[in-house]
Image 1 (tube, rainbow, N blue to C red):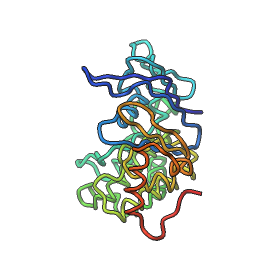
Image 2 (image 1 turned 135 degrees about the vertical axis):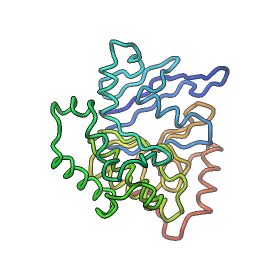
Image 3 (image 1 turned 120 degrees about the vertical axis):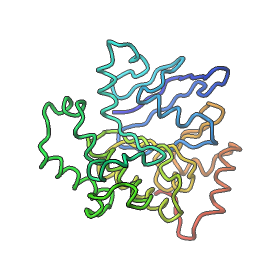
Length: 265
């Protein structure tokens, strides 16, 4: 199981966003994609689930070539790929008209999920999955009858993660998951991502600006700049890189790190 990009190009009008991007994420790994704003990080995630089609190159999710699935007769295969991938957005994007329970259960009630498992879940089964999932993200049961606007932004983030986890994805894609959080909540979410990746044995790709977190929990760190891969390496190699942009990220990070911070073992 893996996600692979092979020489992928993508431009919007005259602006080249991805310029020959190649990398691979293996089963169970945590990959951080770092880089300045507008360098193609979120665009990379959107290519994985087929929201965007590359101008050139190939993208594989396991045995599926996502980059060739934009014709009508391959829509079912693209649906299968998307079912394997769970997307956690920059903002919680919860439905305020629904309770937190209903938000987490939302994906379990879709026709796509029914087709995936070959039947309709009972309400008892849905309830059990929701309760199990919120425990994974450390949310109390008493928040479930509430609406999203009745809980803190940090809890909304966790509810959003639970909604993504409930249908059982094999890949977790995070787009700036700590945006809008205070430093303590940011650290908590980062630890949760690591915990979920290891406990559930899923593969995680995180788009972020958080170099400290990447160095602490990533298996691989990929730097994008001007649409190109500058470096893709384990944290211990990243800190010794002589690439100017990587050095700048590292120097800025080191100046902000708490005294108890440590590099990923």
